Amino acid sequence: MTAAKIDPKTEAAVTAYRQLRRAADTIGHLLGQQLTSFGVSPGQFRVLEALLVNGPMRQDKLGKEIFYDPRSMRYLTASLEKDVLIAKLRDEEDRRFPMVHLTPQGRSLITKLFPRQAKLIRAQMIALGAREQGMLKRLCEKLADGDVNRFVREITIRREGED
Image (tube, rainbow, N blue to C red):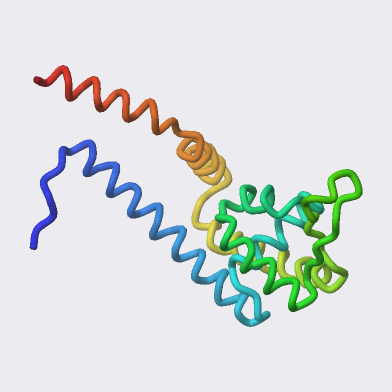
């Protein structure tokens, strides 16, 4: 079976994306192996890391911070709560929504894990010089902030103009 025919610009974009995904998957696999040795999943690590960096927050905001849907967040926070790594406490100002906090055990774990993860990332990223790392950061920010609606409008206008 052969791949569908696509134009050269689309093919170049897909190829670049595949390489980006391959690089992210490679680093993600190594980081995941390290986390497994501590009994923590990548999703759980992201929750603990977000709480360490940002402080306590509502579960819905936490999910948006780490790009997890509400159902996944309920599962992650329940497992972390069961392991006494986080606690959900009612906000004094708005008692409807609990705030997710690191427990002392959670803070202890993430402060051990975070530097190890950072060292592993640094070891992988050493293949790029400081300037290249800065460029990669800017390119990823540009991709993350991309306006999909603008792209769809441009494609639609081009197609209408082709007829």
